[in-house]
Length: 272
Ligand SMILES: [Zn+2]
View (cartoon, rainbow, N blue to C red):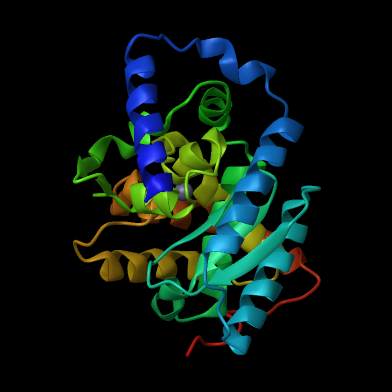
C-alpha cells in the first residue's frame, strides 16, 4: 500500500511537471543505444522477477528456438533473451537491446510455429530498426509516468488502473524507470508498424519459416481480437486490408530469402 501511495504521488507530481514543460525534439539524438539498452535490461529484470514464468516445456522450447532463429536472422548483435510468461494476454514484445517476452495467451491464437516466427519477426524488427527511440530517450530524461497512468484514479488511497499499461507498470511496483513506462505505453507510428511488418517477414524467411504464414497470422489475430483490447501489433496498425496487401506485395522478395535460407522448417510444429 505504501508503495502504491508513493507511486501515485510521483505520478501526480510528474503530471503537473509535464504540463508546463515542452519536450525538445532533439532529445532523442543524444542518448546512445548502450544507455537505452542498459535501461531496458533493468526493466526486463523487473518483469522477470514480477511475472510467472511458464512451466509448459513444449511451448518454452518452441519460443526459445524461434526467438534464437529470428535473432540470428536479424544480424543484430544484441544480448538476446526470451521468456514465456504465464498470462492470458494475447501479446509478445521485444525491448530495445533484444529482451523478448511471449505471453502464453497468444500461443493458441497463433496455431503454428511459423506464425510465432512472424510475430517475433515483427517485434524484433521494432527493436533492430530503433522504432520509438525518441520516446524512450524522452522518457529516460523526463518523467512520463503521468501520461501513462493518466487513466487511473485514486480512490480511498488506492490507485485504480483502467488500462493494461497502468496495470503492468503498477505491477512493477514503481521500481521500473522511464524506459519501462514508455515501452509498455508504446504506440508506434503507422510507418513504423509497416516497416516492422516488412522486416519481420524477411526475418522469418531468413530464419527458415515460410513467409506466406505471415498473411495467415494476421487473419488469426484479427479474428481473435474480436472487439477486445488489441495487442501492440494490432493497435495502431494500418487497416487490415492495407496490411495484407503490403504483406502480399512483399511476399515474392521474402520467398526468395526463404529459398536462400540454409534450413527450411515450413510452418514448423503445430501449437496445441
Ligand atoms: Zn508493431
